[in-house]
Length: 217
Length: 217
Image 1 (cartoon, rainbow over the protein chains, first blue to last red):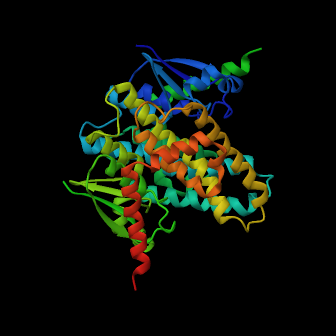
Image 2: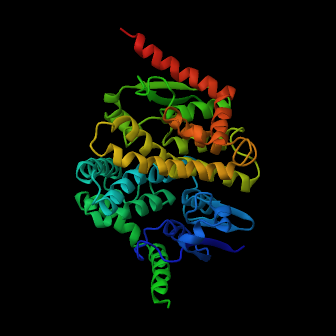
Image 3: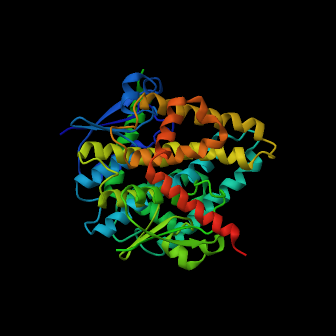
């Protein structure tokens, strides 16, 4: 039962582990499943072989025994359903872990990505000065609401779950913005995730891919 | 086993069924489950009673037998797991239905929402003319990729599933933009969803709430 995922041949984040294969690598490390990685270039991502796996031409994808999935949320849910370690056993707690997975990807991530991409890519655009404070306030509001719910707990709902994994990995995109520093309990929550051995192994593996891509002739 | 959801007391979309309670209403109608609705004003959504249900102060929420959920994706997944009609039985097909649920909310919706909110709310901004075409092209790219995957099939992966429900309900936000008209097979796919009796019942119910809110003294 070999698992194969796809990842950037040379990640645009230069090995900072912000590409979405990191979500899946971390999940597979948490449950102790080995996997192969098929590296794809930006050109290959737009070609038929990859589009057959991922209609939107992105990474990661997941292949196992004839099943092909895209969407890191769906991939992690599949992993969590088949291996212990990412979902609580109690049905209501499991439903809440899934709730935090969706919250990470559909309520937190869009706000985080809109802010950080504007910050990084739109500095010379006419809308930058007008728009950045709006997006920053929106991200700040989400972080404040998350801090309120988290309180002084280690994780969002009891034990560490796939929900924490995705919320933390999405929040990591804010690292270079300095915004997390305004919310010390949330920053500590992210740091707790990054300190997990499974995270460390996943991070090292994706960094090794980037380093190798730079060493190539 | 009473199900209670929350919805806007007076939806800002004026009854067009674009608020996210529509996702959940539609899913509950597909599986034939009755439910109660607790209407909330914008002020109530920011108060502790509602924030206990939804830390980000939004709608919908879902309550059933002591379980409280937010995130329409997680709510629909919970409904689909407990009642036949929204997930195929075959495990791989079920995983792909979940994949389309995540695709709807984390790959399609952010692009659609960024385009439509700019179109509606930012017309008087000095950067509107510069930014709108960028967002429109991004939405167009997603629609083209979706059309490619859909082909001439009725639904995305065999029978109608919770994945189709969410993809279609997210695409409905594009109705007033005219963008769907450029992709006739996708427009027909959305129309097929809207023609389902369960959709029709859900739409009528949310419209009745808005109509009542306008008739109130």
